[in-house]
Length: 160
Image 1 (cartoon, rainbow, N blue to C red):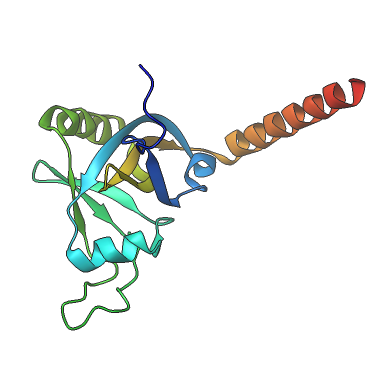
Image 2 (cartoon, rainbow, N blue to C red):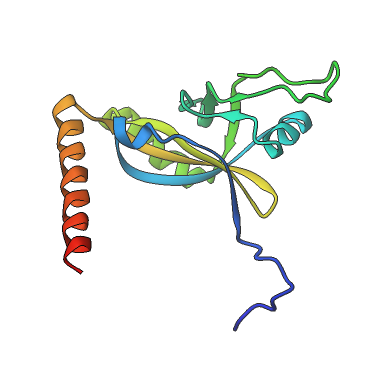
């Protein structure tokens, strides 16, 4: 059933920040969507697009998942109630997802990397990736594969 043209799409994702370097440095095995526990000024600053996710990663502590090094700039109109820019933020996940993460991070030595922050249905979400660090030769192989695909696309385009 099609939606009427005047109604907005409720599942539309409004991206705020994306960690483009993560897929280059890590082999992403699995991803999860998690909510973030934020204060009011943090949400307002995110709506203005003032976030930096490049160094953000997740840790597991006491059966909870926490996001470290996510930089959300202080809100310009905020007063003394403004937030700290790089505070540790709690992630909201189901317990079965947390148990799966604990198993992967502790037993297999994998890392939780923040891939993207976005708004979905008006709520701030973060996409977490379970990643294994790439070695230099893996990165070179990926770059070579990317260049080969680009060359094949050029050759097909010229032929037409």
